[in-house]
Amino acid sequence: MNEKEMLQQMDRIREIPTLPTIVVELNRLLQDPDTPVVRISQTIEKDQAMAFKILKLVNSAFYGFQQQISDVRNAVVMLGFNAVRNAIFSVSVI
View 1 (tube, rainbow, N blue to C red):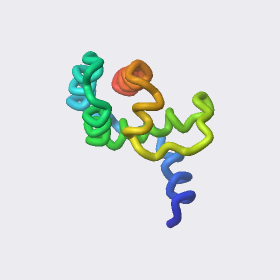
View 2: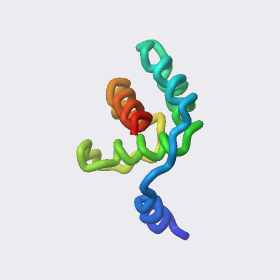
View 3: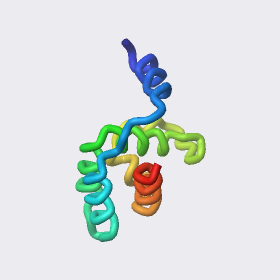
View 4: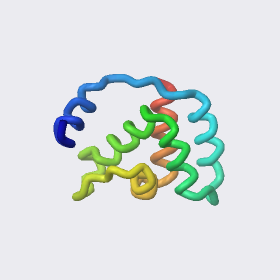
């Protein structure tokens, strides 16, 4: 299976549950503006569903980046803490 086929199959996935403990930890980290991006991205990567949704968001047409972003750390930098916090909250509520 090549990368394109894998991404197409991942697009067909409709719902993967998010771990509540990760949401609580990320909420705590994102409240502190001095938290390193590396720490936030490592925490997001602990939850595959959340990492997938953050990467899907940053690569959406809404943001329109010319290159595909495949690293969670770069996605957090590009989106910013507020957008990541909002995405995490929306994922955890749903």
